Image 1 (cartoon, rainbow, N blue to C red):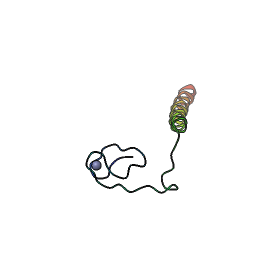
Image 2 (image 1 turned 60 degrees about the vertical axis):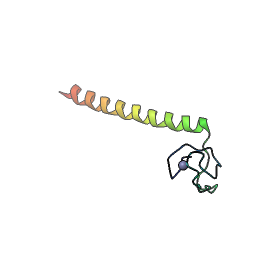
Image 3 (image 1 turned 90 degrees about the horizontal axis):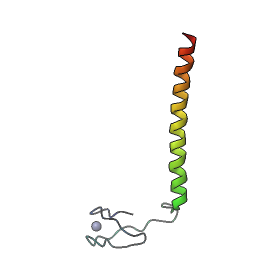
Image 4 (image 1 turned 45 degrees about the vertical axis):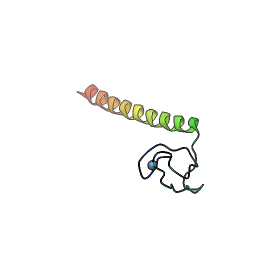
Length: 69
Ligand SMILES: [Zn+2]
């Protein structure tokens, strides 16, 4: 969570910014669901895998074209 006023990092549940003292909106449970660390890692891994898959597809396509020549 980041202060909307000054951009300082805040702990989850902090009602006031420790840096500038501005009041921060408390996120509703449905709006800002906490993602566990392993969840974030899994998401990053998925993105990486997707990238690798795309690169492999492109390489395969180039290889297929070159084979025909
Ligand atoms: Zn602030």
